Image 1 (cartoon, helix red, strand yellow):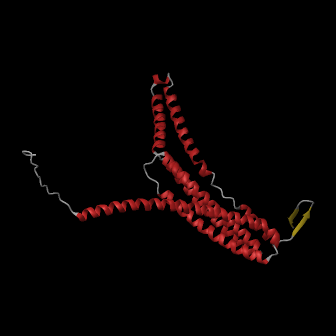
Image 2: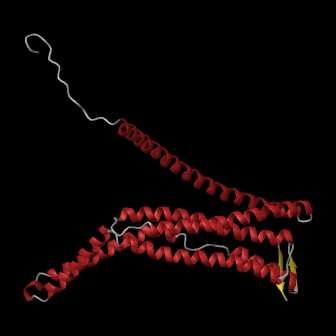
Amino acid sequence: VNGGLPVTINTTVPFDPTMMFVAAALMNIEKKLDEIQEMQRDMMAFLEAKEKAKQRGNLNALMEVLNNYKFNWNNENYKKNKHILLQDIKKDAEQSIILYQELIARKLEKRTFFHASWDAQKVISSTCSEFQEYKLAVSLFAFAQFLEVMLLENYETGFLKSVENKIEAYTARYREIYEVCQGQIEEYMKSSLDKRLFLGIGEIGKILGNAVAKVPIANKYQIDETLVGAGNQLGEMTLKSVEQALKPLIALQEINIQPFVDNIHAVDALYHQPMGILIDQENMYCLAC
């Protein structure tokens, strides 16, 4: 104010409307990308849940065929319809096998050099989930293959051998992937920063203990034994914690498809080899002659 009169100050501010629109557009895109990423996460969770539900639904369907076959063994329509179902379940199982092989491989690819034990624990937990579904997929395939033999009533040795070979091939591949995965995850856990620290401290304790042992006066106070013992104890505790963390994964090592293979062998023997039959009030026993 100058003498009661207002003073007007003119200031030129650089303004580019195009840049404002670009900035607004970028902000809008970032917001949309966040929404898309969240949608992708929700979709992946849904697809994983759907895949798991499909496998459990197929297991229920196979159990139903197993339980009802004895009532429909001479019903051609039943066998024809269920055979179509079994083919679909086999196809689903093989697709799931491929899927979980790839998912497990990707889990291992995401490992980082610098990591803590809880990062390794997350890898173990997620990998166990994938292996559980992978194991179920192989079991579903073996189950469906066995029931298909029953429905087709094809007991030729060549066909039965081909069925057995395919089941065992999928099983061998599961064990192979498991062994590689288990070894890599164990090393990943041991190489975590905190585990390496404790293992390193343990080794240092043993080295110091052995060094102190060479000093005559120190031997009187058993400092060397204390340091070596503490180093050993810390190292053992660390390794035990690694073993404890790996227990859920170790529980998935074996895949039990042997009952299906054994029964395929039994069908082959019953159809092609002379058999003696013994019957009591409750059971029938088949003896190879």
